[in-house]
Length: 529
Image (cartoon, rainbow, N blue to C red):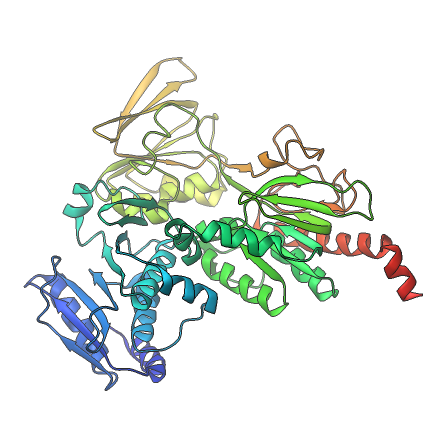
């Protein structure tokens, strides 16, 4: 199961083990159980503090529990093989169970340990899902730190019957005490915010107590991080308030167009950006959702950012980098069947439609890439494009045309997503040439039709927006309000790309610096004289 490189990697990591750990497996005679036995035997052979047993009596086969020897109250269970994107999750589970301290702030660990359960989590993942590891690792840590919390992490492909019975049609899918809890990616902090009733008030009080910033950045994607690095390196007190650090990067798999970086993945890049933020002593405030902007009356006054939890942050200058989100179709059935056949991430949810017929709506790069990826998994893909031709790069169109299980419809206006018994069963579209209405029978619809800027919360701020809701900026990233700048996908700058956002963020950071040195309060000017 493990190649030489993986074994060497694990052997190195196992040097951090402090306590003996047990791997307790529940198996049958199937192929997956044989693979699980092989994996656990190979892991146990790498270090004397790791032992494997095969006398488990869990409800799922194959499955295995990781626990500190003799302590059944702090354990995590994997059902199926945690390989692929989840191999790192397996390594962390082994290390944490063996007493290696997690890289988590002490306040967060204290919050986990203080929770009063029971909290019985079950979470379904797929091996190709790049959003799943965050949830797997969050639940793993919680289960190993608090005996009132249990976590069973289930590889959906191995337990397809259970996936169908519980109507899991999108991953990550998390259940709590037998009931649906959340569909989608969650950080550890987000899980805690959902189950700790006092978390919101605690977070608001902590934010309210902060002194004013010289530069406050709203948004933690590539643009916001680039801006923060520049202003922090100029010596200004900088804060980043992010609803979800990393933004769209957290939902992006392969990145192959960054100069100097042949290939990386969104979550990996987001982790590197967070590391750089912390190294530059930027105050990172995650899960801080902006609600209202109250601009300063004049350059020497402070701007106020009101957050959804009621907290208020103040700053001499602001950089808005709130990014964008996937655009929705806005047709009947889309909301009703979201996560029940309507999906927005082909990498995460594609494996759940293996052997089925699906549609992709959108003929740009993202839509064509999604159709290509899905064609390798599902029985058949229908690409539906409103325009008279596809808009994707020619190299992608050529690849699409080479696939035998893909049909392309142009001049097709999607008008409805239909379903029965709680899940998608079809897509209705209008042929824009003939006006005829047609129906495609299918099990899933992947929506890939572009982006919408995250700017609705700015409606009463006096900030100038375009007809599409984008923040209007000049060549220096300045808005129409003094001391407020903007960058990235939420602005009128064309080409919504990671490298463009980083460049625009750097520009906005330099512009904020220029504004601050030209508008220093009288006290600062006197001190400098």
